[in-house]
Image (cartoon, rainbow, N blue to C red; front, side, top):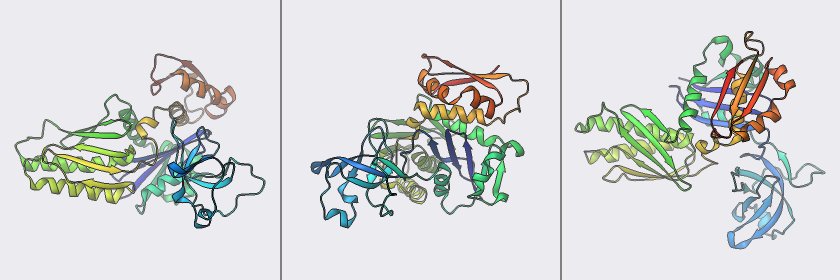
Amino acid sequence: MSYHVLYEACPWHSRAALFDEHGRLLTLRIDDVDRPFREGAIVLGRIRAVEGSLGGAFVDIGDRTDGFLPFTTLMPEQRDSKLTQGQSLLVRISRAGYLDKGARLDARVSLKNPPNKLTPPALVQAAPSALTRAFHDAGSQPVKGWVPNGALRPTMAKHLAEANIGQVDADGDDSWYTRLDTELDTMLTPQPSWPMSGGNLIVEMTSAVATIDVNAGPSVSLTRSETVLAANLAAATEVARLARLLDLGGVIIVDFITPPVRGHRHIISEHLEAALSTTDENFVSLRPMSRHGIVEITRERSGPSLTLLMQRPYVVAGRILLELWRTPAGSLPRVRGRRIRCHPDVASLLKQRLTSEACLTHLGMLVAIEADPLLPVSRYTIADE
């Protein structure tokens, strides 16, 4: 059974979605032309301040906020000499910044010297692309690639043989769009809920703690221990998927359906730990289940949670652009144009990118953009005219 990667791109934004053999979304990787300081990028930075009490230094990498470099990541030869304010230093971004939090940096860089004549701060080596990161996520699993049209086949062909590449507009299988859009829409609901065998999971987040509540469906009889065990085992598999997909970090509290049999607690915890250990490289530890069905997971966060990321204006604008780009230019002869209604912050970004020339060249029609301050950032409509 193969994993699947759906790759979409336009001139400003791209993303790669990894699905398992059952069509469940595992990871979503995003690139945006205005956000080059992603995990894996190598930057020639300039030390802004050395903070011994914090065990690190703040480094200007050219991003909106300075990155933080822990002393523990310095190379042996760098530890022999003290870091000084204004000093140039090659660093790798180990975790991208978000809102008012700067990037996490690492001085263990394979490059020994930056290119000549670079003035810090400067991007030395771009981060791996969204598509490359999705293939990394797939690990050793065989992969089937999907692209919306022939223009993206050469990009996918750098990773896969032609026989393993499917084309959505040619093969007529647009179910991958439906799967992806359904997942993203679920994330953006006030109380995200994911179905599972025998019930559903509700995910809630604060800045430090995430909670996942496992709810039994009407088909689960709480008086039948084996039925409850089966529902909890299904939930454990889905918890492992959601923790990775949403990039839930810090402490994750999972409230399972209370097992009526004491011995089932260990079975469920063991199943959950095995699922996390084999699929999630950021999983740290798991505490045994309490008698009330509570499990505490510790997990490292690699960046902002996907649920929060999907509400950022540049990501919403990118989602709109990719939805427009799914339809090849000239394929809608009766449609004269399209009208987008969205939040002003999203509209501002779209107007910079959807110029008349860009629309006619890539879409074969004009696009009108209407800013509506009453709409949440993550909400928008696209209508044919």
